[in-house]
Each structure stands twice: as structure tokens, then as C-alpha cells.
Length: 98
Image (tube, rainbow, N blue to C red; front, top):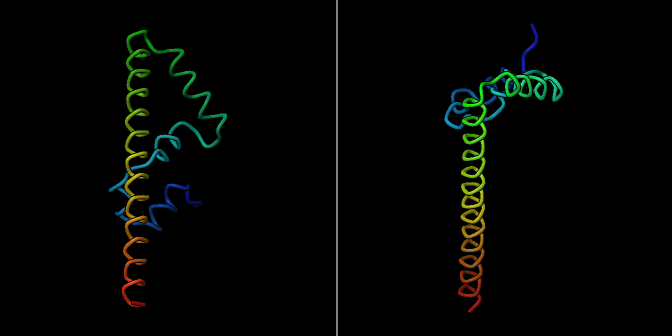
């Protein structure tokens, strides 16, 4: 029996994987190729009642906006941490050489 990418990831990362869920599960439910995934989503949207369609679009829009903000915040925090570490190391080197 062949392992799916999800199975391999689960074996590699163990239970830690569940602490940070990823889109892989959702994408794998939609299909194994980009074409299959696109077809599945297009079919779902095409067959959805207007209320479901609008709710899904609003939900995806809010989720994407939130993810973008959180990624930007995380990236900024990582850059700030790296800068502070470099500054601290430089101060330490200057102190030692003085």
C-alpha cells in the first residue's frame, strides 16, 4: 500500500503535525492533481446555492486576509529578532575587543 503525502508527513512529524494544521488535508480531499482540485472546487461553487456561495467567498476572503496579516506579523517579528541578535552579538564583540 502506497503512502499519501499526508501519511508520509504524519509519519515524519508525528502528533506535532496536528498543532499546526495545514491546507494539505483539504487539498488532498479535493483531488490528487491541481486539475482535479480546481474541478472539484469549481463544481462545488457552481452547484452551491447563492447563500452558500457568498458565505464561502466571504469566509475565504476573511481567512486569506487574516493569514496575510499574521504572516506579515510573524515575518516582521522574525526580522526584528534576527536584528536584535545581530546587534547583541556586535555589542558583545565590541565589548570583548575593548
